[in-house]
Length: 258
Image (cartoon, rainbow, N blue to C red):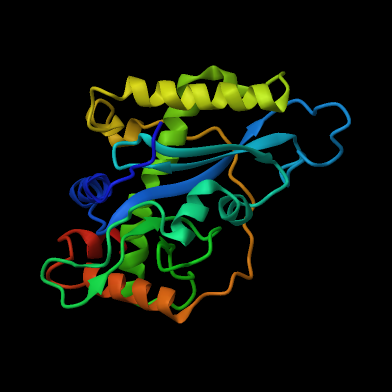
């Protein structure tokens, strides 16, 4: 699989997220899961995770149609989401500006220009290009609506993992192979997942949303204490303002959080 490498390709991903999931300037949904393995000989606690089993980590960026745009697999199970992501090539490309992501753009009907972002959950650090929900305490109605809108877009990565783990039964029990061979198995499954979705716009085109399978892969541990820049908070606040504005609101969002 290939990460989009032109501005046009990234803009196509963002347009699909806006059309299907009503989230602006979104380049993908990010998350990580544990893939259970049998403990390799003499591996100590490297693969032993907080869920008390041995695993390697599958980190993925998913598009609006539940297809994998980027996959990193093989990190030790003891690591948390944020640490795995910070050490992968996708994070390096984002930090170095080498992915040809489009520059800030003005959203329709909105005054300010905003960057393109990846949506993630609270396990990741808030950055100008990584958006996560507001903390759950003392939220305003606008912030609750933003969290709902972001979580709705982020749900596609959970759905993708659910389809993957239910389609390929190898994920249902610890894989009895050396970690490097498990990496090949997981990457192959992700490629086959994309291949099997090639003729549909998204999984929900052939499967009702309520029937999308739950993910059987355990989530990664969350890591707290990430420092957040003022610019990252500003971008989130601006996106919050947009999804609550006349231009960016959808008519069912207030009812959805009530």
